[in-house]
Length: 486
Image (cartoon, rainbow, N blue to C red; front, side, top):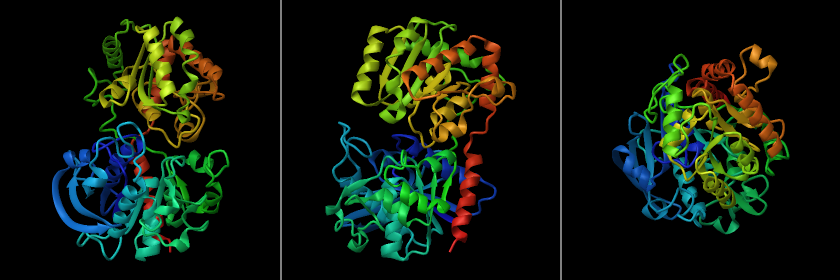
């Protein structure tokens, strides 16, 4: 079985969010399955960071794609044998800023072309005109809107025999662009319609993937159901309902080589479910670095997140002063909504010895927050899967979450019944409100004070199977199902 994994980012080459973690870990986990007989390669844009980090780079071909001359390179991700096909085009990808936006956070105006090229190269790799000699995949897995045109190109231009899966990591990001891009993207105008890639008179990369791919997947079973409803379908629930038999929800896993408290090189002291005492040393070091009072009896609450309406963290600032007065400490790492950044920054200035606001993303600090915090806060309004709550479980940092998407699939609320049967792993809000968040935090803190009961919840979470190996087998089953479907 030859598999091509198309993505716009992959850790450790480049990362803006969870898609990178999945793209870096899932192909590797599939390769390592004893039941997988074959080969898997990634295809992605050759951003400056990617070109700088790839190992064993070779130039394969120069090809013209959508009016752009691109160099196709191959290389490997450092520390692995996972092959990457990188698309080098200096004008499109080697820019200051991020993969999707400039240094000021504004989307690149030519994102339609940048990810149209990614999709077109991916489709060509699945065709008789592949620039990669002697390697044509049996199946391609496309991920999120940035690769959504690939199944359309395969069906409409290439008549490709390669099967396709389109994976939805977040339906809210759709890649919708003005119809003026139709010619430049070399899309057949006849398919700019409701039964095609047209969405409210725009070209929708996401809808193209949903409409033309052979099979669909998303990142948790609950989210697979939620996106077929009006509230979370973002206007595409009708199409998803018609394709419900082709839609599979598979909960993400985590890379236990990168995220494992027993092996984590970011931590000042490692620990495990059997030797949990090292966690207190991480907390102590984190308190020291943040300028907090070093106090094992002060509950430390951690947040690592994009600061957006989706993540629900706007519920927190209004209740923080009350929790701070009760002795709580807060460490926040993230960026996004400027008003929310300002709210947390103001609290950090007012309560500098109990609140630390860190704007941006920092891999080292994120590991230490998830390991050093007592409780992890993640009150998302919707969450396709979420990875941070899985990291919290693995690191003995019980999460506070809402009952949505992958959060509902991975975190079991602590109550009398779940505590007794050893399934309690965290705390679930009754509603997405500040009052409910405060009540849930208070409920968690009450149990946290009883170290024996708290240790039981930690142990339940740390015993839960959250590795990619478990989820990778489900993907392999989906691959086999896709290849057997005519």
